[in-house]
Length: 147
Image (cartoon, rainbow, N blue to C red; front, side):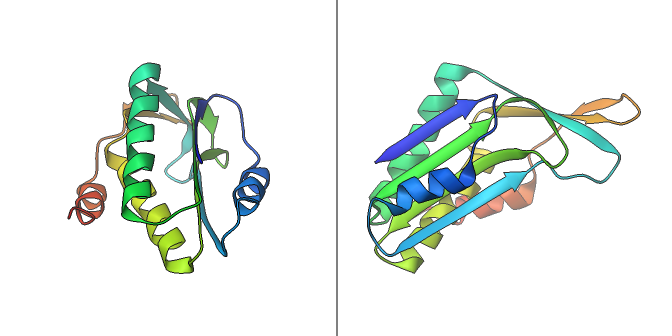
């Protein structure tokens, strides 16, 4: 089972993890990302092209399912304007074994940071704005999974 959602509203990470656990197996791994503060950040605005984004997320999930034996994958990514501390992303995997679940979840997050077509704009407390550029460390993490 693969579940992909791109949405403006919040999600209940606990319910999503519970749904994956119900698929069986012995391991559920997850990552919940939040809009981090600091640097006088007020909000983060995420834009995307819906058809392109959902297709890219599905491709990431399908690749994870090819690499690891999984019972399920959930990827939820929010878009729109999000305040500091709000949830932005959930990546969760379910497998019979801990290592597969953890590695697949980590792989998904590394790919989301570089491959998924989201454009992020930081909005600062003083009203200034800037688009977030790709970081080399994110690119390196994503390419480290290449066969």
